[in-house]
Amino acid sequence: MAVLKILCLALILASIPRISLSQNIVPTLLVHGGAGDVSDESIPFKKIGVKLAARVGYETLKKTGSVVEAVQQAVQSMEENDQFNSGYGSVLTWEGDVEMDASIMDGSTLNAGCVSLAKDILHPIALARSVMEKTRHMYLAGEGAMAFAVEEGFEILPEGSLVTEKSKKALEDYKNSLNGNNANKKQKSCPEIGDKIFGSPGTVGAVAIDAYGNVAAATSTGGITGKMPGRIGDSPILGGGTYADNDSGCVSATGQGETIMRFNVASKILALIEHFGMSAQDATAKVLEEMTHRFNQTAGVISIDGKGNLGIYFTSRRMSWAYQRGEELHYGIDKDEDVVEIVGEPRVEFL
Image (tube, rainbow, N blue to C red; front, side):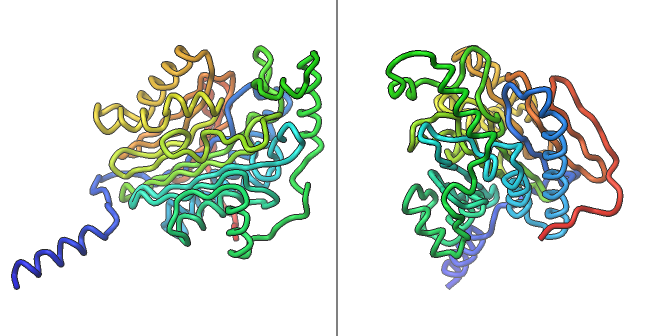
């Protein structure tokens, strides 16, 4: 009987989410709005967008106590903003359509939800969370993902509702830049000509940690301008562009998705944190510099380690980011930029 009681207790303990006993962790919500060749004229709008997202996410964390809910709400704020390449601001495929990817992960349980090729919904990150919580799977794509969205009552927008004039102009500019015959074959190339990127380099993401060391990560994107229909990037790939684990930390990446996937960026960063004791900043910088040196492609990452240390690093020209910790709101977009605002009342309201 004693052995049976011990086994029952072990099973109960195993089912409880793992919570860090670390002390002095300050709850933090950190977001990025995409890394790349961000234009000078878009800088003020990007900063406003990431600052709002950081505040929305942080207030959600304080009100609900849920890091998962916090990163979702932060990302949804940016999905509604056409300054970012996600949701309403998504760039277009070669055929002129919007196909979106997203993922969300709970570091206390390692549960996750991922979606790809989502169409005509404003918040693919919400669909990713529904996959995590309401299916026996972790990844749905294409027609199956959209059928599940209908089943779950997501509003399906009229076809083309997410296509903006800005994204149409970016696709036109990309096609015109190819300057050659056999245009249909050219769609297989990367939508970068030299250092120029067509469309918003605005994949969005959020990471968060609470006072108990619970972490979460979320990433959402429209991909790259002129991509082949059906192309999937790193954002919904666990260990590539998104990951969260209470034992190490949380990561959301942005940049050239094919390269981020090949280098397994998120997993490498968290491995350095967990197994070599590196801080989030040092691990993030090391992995991104190695990736850029090996592939000559750039990227950006936000991360938080299990002790609550932040990592904000990018090898791209710029990356918009912001975080709130207590009453301090930090943000930036250029190298070594860190502007601090003291947040006062009234606080941001959210649904």
